[in-house]
Each structure stands twice: as structure tokens, then as C-alpha cells.
Amino acid sequence: MDYDVLILGGGIVGCAVAYELSKYNLNIALIEKGYDVADDIAVVNTTIVYDGSETSNEVMAGFENIGSGLIREACEKFKIPYKKVGSLRIATNDAQCAKLEEMYLNAKDRGISGVKLVNDSEIKEIEPNLDIEVKKALYSKNTAIIAPYHLSIAYAEVAADNGVNFRLEEEVLNISKITTKTTKGFDVITSKNKFKCKVVINTIPDEIYVYDNNRIEEKSEEIIQKKMNYFLAEDKIKNSLKKIVVNVIDEQTFVISSPMINGGTMFGVKNTNVLDTNKGVYFSKCIVPSVTKEDISEMIREVYKRDEMVIDNSKFDDGYIRVTGKHYGKVTIAPAIAQSIRNDIVYGMNSTLKKNFVDKRREFYRFKNLNRDEINEIINLDRRYGNIICACNKVSEGEIVDCIRRPLGARTVEGVKKRTGAGYGNCHGSYCIRKIVNILAREMDKSPTDIVRNSKDSKIVSGRIKEFDEV
Image (cartoon, rainbow, N blue to C red; front, side, top):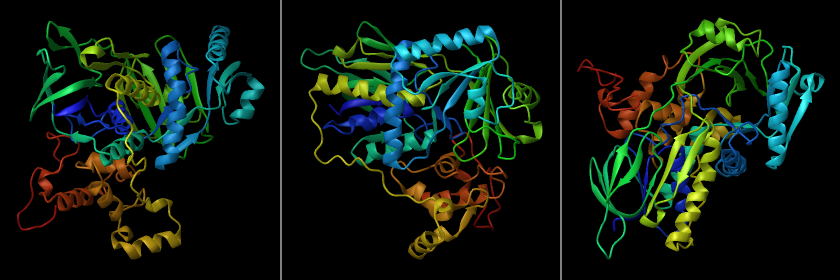
């Protein structure tokens, strides 16, 4: 066998599974068709960590409750931004009040702590800037926000440092069972190689593999195309909210306001339609009446994820586990899913813990978070930390070089932006994009015309005048 375990997909779930399994004496590889891991994380590096009180699905609530605790521990251990801000799900009519009471009783039955029903006066104490008429709210004090991309990268880096082989830019083409009497496992054919393994863990949400005799074939799954429209606003909003606030308008639409991990506000509107800025502001005013079109700096859209993910281990005796489905709280439940899969693997393969496992991420520096003495000290060690590349977010050349040279380092402009925050400022990269391209080209020994945004078909520069060394 080439590997004991092959993990398919390098999203947040795949990275979390790789991290958990890297603690054991197993030969593991992760296969990802993209240039980078965690491509399923939105460009907005802020997501909500739920506590399980908001979902109607009992199993998902359990995963969220467990996952929220695991994320808090991981963020502390790996130095990832984490803010416990709390959330208010508001009710403006009697029908919504009845729904909140039902959710509260469910939360009590599930043993979720820090959840209570509050009236209008208590709401004002919790969120003084909420300037709309509210009859009642469900308050969850343990709801938090994190930088999800940093969490995924941390899981992946620690897994790589502990022996997991990450095979990027490699697509799985076919999986077939090994049918000999003496050997159990799978032949996995990719766009670059052919492997034999004992166990396959499929975490790719858009592909479901089902058995057909001795063969596993790909089967497509229909996705309900509800839209999640995100509208990002800077800190200049008058009376911006410190808590996460959710307002359910009707069965088709809800609005959410959440602070972002690095400042500003994110408005999310779930609707069956793609919304423009005017419509986004219209719905956002249902929570923050003072928001204007001029406050919106960026729009992002994605397909809304339904309320269910499934760990299918019914074929584990054959060595096959799949994680299927999509969920809006995928980041929250990923660590819990990873631990569940880890328990199955460890028990089924009688695995033992590594004595030399290192549960620590390599050191890194964030220039904007350092004080003057720390800045001078790091510049004395490496002068590149004194060269600011992104003026908006105060990201130095040293940080960008480090993010490229680390385990699973950035290979694309998007990878640099997500890891460091360079290019996400007020100028949207107009000041620093050329510098980022040149640093990537230099560090990877490539031409600037070969550098891509996030995939092979997304080159930043189509050509250059040969007399110049730089773009």
C-alpha cells in the first residue's frame, strides 16, 4: 500500500481530518485539485462560530456545540483571531416570538449553555445601538467570530509538519476497490499518479461516490440555488452593532449583521435572487437603519448552504468514509466531524498515538499587531519586515515572504491575500497587487506573467515589455 489513508479534498473538513489523523502512526496523504487548501473558505476571512441553538437539526446542533469548543481551543493554541461577541435572533411579531420560544426550549433540551430569551429592555442593554422595534430576542452569549482561513491553514500546516503529504493540483479521476482475497483497499487514479490505500475519506461536498458492484462511480447531486449575498461595510457606519443580529423577514429571506474580525460590518442577505447594492442596503436597514449605499465597500455572493451534513461510514468495513452535504456552519462543525472520523479510523485500524507529534504551529509575525520595540527588533533580524507592501492593512514584505516559504505556502495572489490580508484594504489591491506578483515571482523563481490569481486560468499579467525586469 502507498498510504494507509487518502483524504480527498483540502477544504476546512479535509484539513481538520488531516490534523486529527496526523496525531497517529499512519501514512496519510491529502489530494486537492486546486492550487491551495481551504479554497472553500470565502474571500471574507470572517465567519460565525455557532453554538447549536439556531439549527432545527438535532445532529448538526450537537456537532456545532462540540465544534465551537474545539475551535476556541484551536484558536488559542495556534494564535488565530477569535472574538466571542454573542448573537441576537430578533422577533418583531407574535409568530416570530413563538418561534424563538421553541428554539429556546430546544436549546435547553440540548444542554446548550449561555442561551436565554430576552425582552425589549434587556435587548437594549445587550446591544444599545440596535435602533429598531423588537418584541423579543434569543440571546446566545457564546456565539463568536473567527478568521476561518487561518484556522484551515493552521490545521494543514501542523498536519504537514507531522508527516501528512499534501498533493495539490492533483484531481481524483477514478476510485476502484481492490478485489483480491488477501488485500482490502482501493486503487485511486489521479491526474498525476496512481495510488493504493487502505482507507479513503471523501470530503468533497459536490461529489458523491456510490458503490456499483466492485466500482465506485461519481454521482452528481442537485443543489438548491438559494443565494447568500454579502455586503461589506467599513467602520464608518453610524451606530454599528457589536453583536451578531439576525432578522428573519419571511420564509425566503433573512438578514444578518455581523462584526468582522478585522473591523467593519458584514451584512448577509439570504434570498432566491441575486441582489444589487440598492437591494442589499434595503434589507440591511431591517437591522441597521443608518446604513447607506456609500457605506458598502464590497459585494460577495455564494450559494446558500442547506442545513445538513452527513458522515456516511456505512461502507467503513470496506475502507470508505464520505462526508456529504453542505452547511452554513461548516467551519463550526468541521472539527467535530474530524474527531468523529478520527475515532472510526483509530478504532478500525488499531492505530497508536505518535510519541513525537508536535501540536504547534510555526511562529509568524503580524506587523500591524507589534509595538514599536517589537517592530524594531524584527526589522533588525530581517529588514524585509520594514518594507510595507500593503499600506492599507500595514502588511510587510517579510510577512508575504514568510507566507510563501511556510509549509503549504502561498502559490497564488489570492493565497497571499488570505494569509496576510494584503490587498484587502480600501484600495482593493491597486497599490500592492503589482508588488505581490513580483514577490511571488521572485520567491517561486517564475516570471511575473506566470503568477495567477487563484487558478491556472486566472493570470494577473498577460505579458510585459522585455526591456523591463519587473511588471
